[in-house]
Length: 307
Image (cartoon, rainbow, N blue to C red; front, side, top):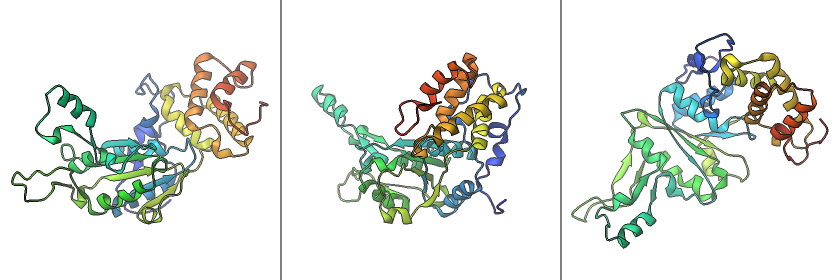
């Protein structure tokens, strides 16, 4: 076990993420949502989070679909007791969207209705970094920038300025005398957010951006990890035998593919397990073959059709 001074220690969150007590009445009756559970069973991942916290660098997560990239950040925020902000990147995402978004349509509608607001600030919405830099009730934040490889290569490099200086200029001039400077949003180093960036590795990221990140690659979940996730999600409904059987089937589907990284994810495993449990469908039966087809196999390229 790695020994160092931890700022982030997921072991302190034992009641929510590591108990496997089927008879524990304190578990909620409903299933935990996907972003409410992350099993921190990889010491290198925990170390990477701590390194990112201590260095102030973004944490960049690689890994196949279903490896937990998107759910890590909200769970780090929950364990630390910090605020959480997120932005899912698309091909249309502009660098400014992470700082602010100008609502041109609202302004146009107000102008046409002759209700135009005198203060231009009225038409700007705060982006995730703006919210994290300002802080809420003095709390630090975790910011998730999800699937950054979907955007133009300019977007990752555009983060270097705000994250390096922990400040950025706002797009309007607040000086009433019109002879001063643009307003600036900034945050002290000791209050800086933890920025978590995920990528599906669909596009190569700029080298200057990579050099300024703490990088960790998440592995596809193995059976041991799947069982821990199932126990955390299902609580008192957890059936170890059934969970193990469904995990074996998922691994079988994955191994039948030419590219195993495109195999069924943890979320799909949970869907199959919950359906099997709720419908009374036992793995190995003809009913299970149909259930497996719609939850695990689907229409994946390279997957064998035989069960």
